[in-house]
View 1 (tube, rainbow, N blue to C red):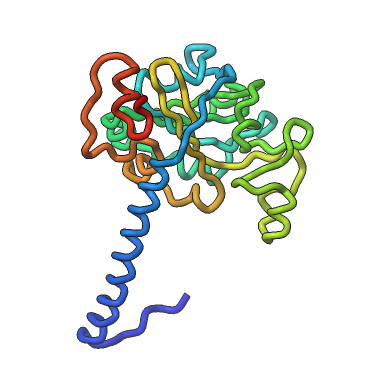
View 2: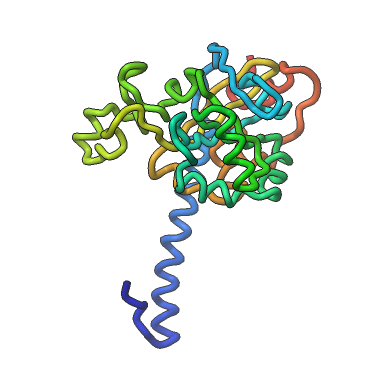
Length: 248
C-alpha cells in the first residue's frame, strides 16, 4: 500500500475541503437511508421458535428481556463445528458492557443466536469470556427461515435477498456455493408490541460488516436512535399509537 502524497498545507486544505463535501453528502444520504429503513413495513412472527439458553428453553419473545426491540446477531457456528466462525468471533469480542447498556437505554436488547447445540455455544461463550446473551437455535427452523443456514433440502437457497442463480449471475456465488448446510452471517431486528413480535429488518453480506457503536445498531431498528421519542405509557395500544404509520 502506498503512502499519501506529501503536499503543502494550502494544497492539503483544498483536498480536505473537497473530501468534506463528499463526507457531508454521504452523511445526508445515510440519514435518508436510515429514515427509509425505519419506514419499512414489518411482518408479524407467527411461528413458535424455541431456543435454548442458560435457563433452559425460551421463546423469541423471551429474548427481548422485556424491552421493545431485539437485535439478533446470526452467529456462524454449525452443529458439527468445534468452534465459532473467526469473523463472527472477532466482532463479538467487541461487544462491550457499555454497548449493551447504551442499547438497553433505548429499550433494545442485543443477542447472538447460533445453530450449534447449547452445550457447544455455552462452552464457547465461557471460553471467550462473553457476557452478552447467546442462545442456541439447534433443532429450530429459525436459521433456515431467516436464510442464514442454507440447505436446499429444507428451503430453496436464498442469501442477501438473492437466489443461488442470481448470485452466480452477479458474480457472488461464494455466498451460496459449497457443501450444504452452509452457515452465513447476518443481523435481524424485531419489534415487540405487547406479546406480538414483528420482524422489521435483516442485513447480510457486505451490509452486515458496517456495524460499530450503539448508534449503528440502533439505525437498523424500527425505532431508530429515539432521540425525540417520548416514552409511551400504558398497554400495548399506547405503543402502537406512538409508532408512526401504526396508529389505527
